[in-house]
Length: 207
View 1 (tube, one colour):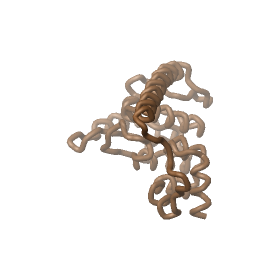
View 2: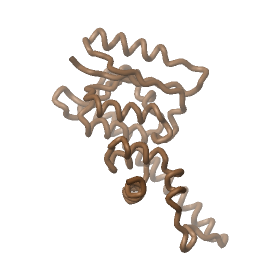
View 3: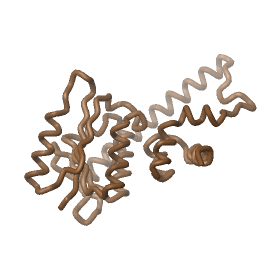
View 4: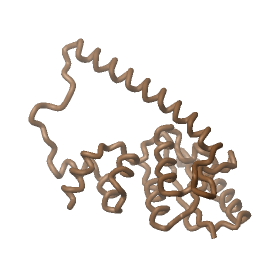
């Protein structure tokens, strides 16, 4: 039996995700797949992964319960931020869990667990878009820094400044939760964009 979970998202409280859940439930039944869990959220897809509690819960669940597929009606339900979506797909791929995208009728992995050629084409396009986004962001940040410095501003942390353990725990509450769930430093870093070095410090603080 193929074990699946359904992931559905809408952007505002005024919207409902029932249609997504119903369509994917019907799809599962027609293919003889079992639906082990349903994860739903009402949140902007542009939010970072670490701000999306249900997405993080889903990632933890599929790993702990040996799920074969994650089902979404369309890729945008997983998120609208290209970088965030690519990170989730990479995490699932590394765990051998296929993402099924209903409107494209494709999966990210083949039955043998290899990256699907069609989905790879889609992911390649997304990756190129993400690369351009990163380049634009870097250029804007660099331009902002240069303008700030030209006006006499100083960039960077104050000399001798160091956050207390309490401040670290408050700022990185989500990262600490994921580490306590047993996720690897690499996976937590991919989800939250927090550096490996910072995560190592958090693991020591919470030991």
